[in-house]
Length: 294
View 1 (cartoon, rainbow, N blue to C red):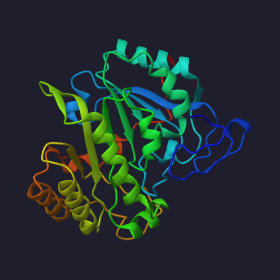
View 2 (tube, helix red, strand yellow):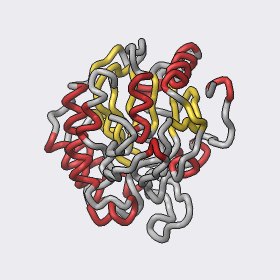
View 3 (spheres, rainbow, N blue to C red):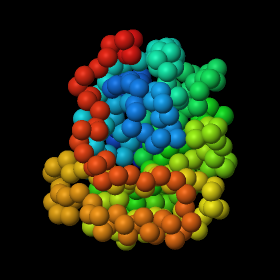
View 4 (tube, rainbow, N blue to C red):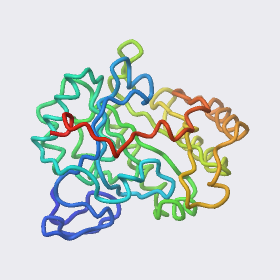
């Protein structure tokens, strides 16, 4: 697995990034770190008291039009960092009290990342991604990732095509989630802290309740009760550039309808308060702490 014929993500661009060719993500052949920080706002079972050691990578293989991290996901943004530099970054975050190492949108840099995960870190490694992943790529992570934290954004192909340019999103993400759960098994806990497992995030989109219900139906039909955890997110924040209904927040009625469906499917996991839909929770990617990016 390398950058010479890049097929890391389902876009399968096939470009030689080592020769300067650019595919869908526009990224080079070394990792770009946009920010590294102790992140207190992940799910409580992840963040704990110390926070997640979040490493935000630049670029993205999905490119959702409503992305809250568009400042870094929309292009190849960040400090070039090799495998040894990533490992030092992980160790610095752990020294600051990180409960885990939370890799945010890392797939486009997997050839640089994999060596940084050996030897195994003493805290859980979280693979935080959009769910649009190749099974073949995920298999390279087996034994190195403890907690998968994928989105399952869409069951509706037309919605996926309009908002993320990926009409095949659902079929690809469904296969990816099955592989993630195969690797991690049923969630394992130490008190209120998750040590291993798969947490499926679903962001409710305004005016798209039916899409959410179909997503939850699939999870409930595919996995046994308790086999995965669901994080039902209501934090959608209009970022501009999209018309109705995406120019507003999710209503209380929409959230309650989807939440009730989650319970009807006997899905366990996490929910969010309405106050989560606030741009103030988006990390400031313009302010980097140089101590964390050496």
